[in-house]
Image (cartoon, rainbow, N blue to C red; front, side, top):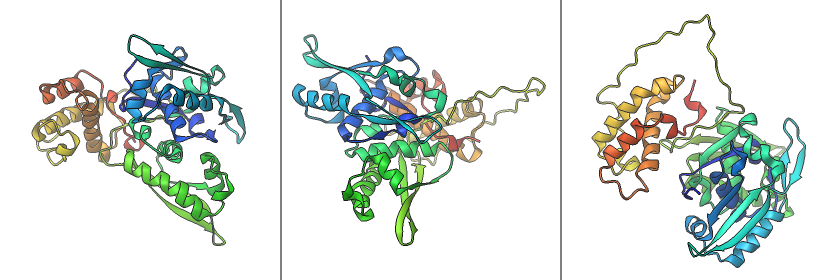
Length: 359
């Protein structure tokens, strides 16, 4: 059983991104996020997830006993989600989970929680590469207080994969995605104040993306919202999947021509604000580590855009710091530890930037 941390990866299928979660609370959506971060989405044998009530509460900053947890789990298991049928506007209704168990573990003096997804939804949870998915760190949604923030964040993540910065969605479709169909949201000013602005503000404050929106009107009535979304500069890198994963095979008759890899300039990466990004390592050492990453970047990411190379390098160094040092108080020599962690691993282990970094 892996540790529950904000660095855990959530890999969410497009079907879950665009499912309609009616009557789900923010707490229940956070529980779903925790579940997704603990499974191996390529192995159905990992469908049962276990964690202690203590670590769950400590991670999410909650005060919860077995009685309140039982009430949340009962509603969580009874609630229904509308999962879109691929290639159509039709939906199927499912309960996401079929089992939850809470038992006392005397060895750790805490309650052990087990939850298991609906086996009929195996393609939604475990065949994610077939129809695409989004990928991000658990920390970006785990601390969100609004269910609308969690739902919108996933949608924005999916839109980021398209490479376009602006995306338009009708008010009716957006309300449906949010499950905000109550008549109290019929007036746009109420929907904006209680749903849309709450979600946008929380995403901009907590997550690794920045979003703005504008209103689209017809006959003076707001009929759609146009979102503009981008990754924050030097956000922790995340490599997201496109709508499908495609392996490119070179033509047999096309000989491969290797170009010499340029060494980065010795002064490169000295102007980065390393104090904010990697506070435990001296600036010169960070720049040196970044240059070593830059020398490997072209071979491991041959289609990296030239204008994104520096940002990608900084993102990889930051990602390695987040994973190897930030939450590890036992590191005596951070610079050596960080350098070793990067040298002994593929850069993809730390990289999480979007497909807009690639040609």
